[in-house]
Length: 91
Image (cartoon, rainbow, N blue to C red; front, side, top):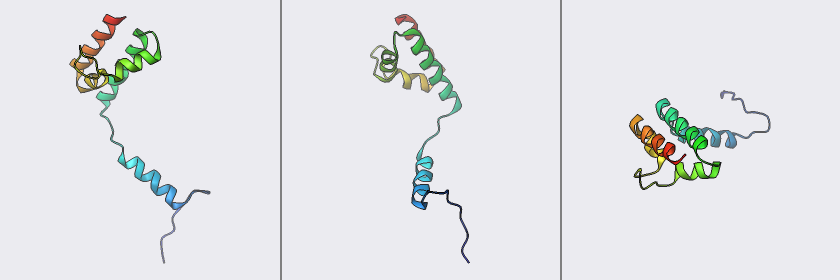
């Protein structure tokens, strides 16, 4: 006899397999990386005039920093401090 599996009402086994596959493909960031990204994003939203400007700053290459601020802040604490200083200078 085969094993009995539970499938949510209205869901097909294909739907459940797709959800499981998508979740497994994600990479998880380390807690310290998440903390630095969050801190820098919050600072950007506080220092810059609006949401669009903050998102543009975080995600576009900044020549003075030498890359995307969100990437620079993610690498280490020194990078996060460089981005924070750039944000404070713009405020």
